[in-house]
Image (cartoon, rainbow over all chains, first blue to last red):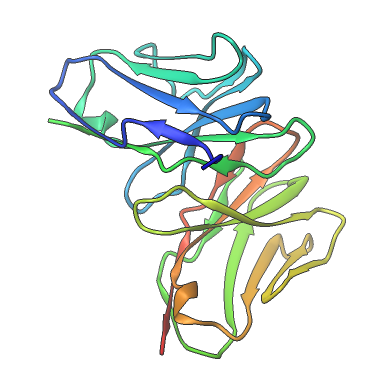
Length: 113
Length: 111
């Protein structure tokens, strides 16, 4: 399967713990996006990379959130000191430089107890 | 802020009919609108993109329109099938960066 993959698919953690999610984009895609989606809502943009450069971050992204894409391939999203309000589906998407459509992964569902 | 509004009520139709979903946007026209399909527990899947200067786009049983006067896009599925049942998301964008999504409209096609 050459689509976008995300790991883990589900994560349950206790409030205050740190979590890290991984996204592997489609191999030739330069752009990588992170979104968050809660029940009944559409995906909300969090951050975006062009190769290894993080070009845009949403104001929604608090200091507890950090994302990296060290070699321009896979990306990680870390949430420090998780809060119950962080419970959501975290979606990763990728796209070609020359194309506007985004290809989404299956998401990581985070539950903070 | 730039918003996308979609009817939050589910749309129920009979198999074989045409489903029409509405997407309204606020403020200035986006450079393009995109439509995605999302099944429960899965990531969105890209369906169609329409640019500001295009009135209509078609792909198989799908058709999307862009009306800058009404600030609205309509998404049509003709000859609908139960397999078309899903949530359909509208998103606005400009350039290659962020997409702003609506909440989505759930479509239920009954046999």
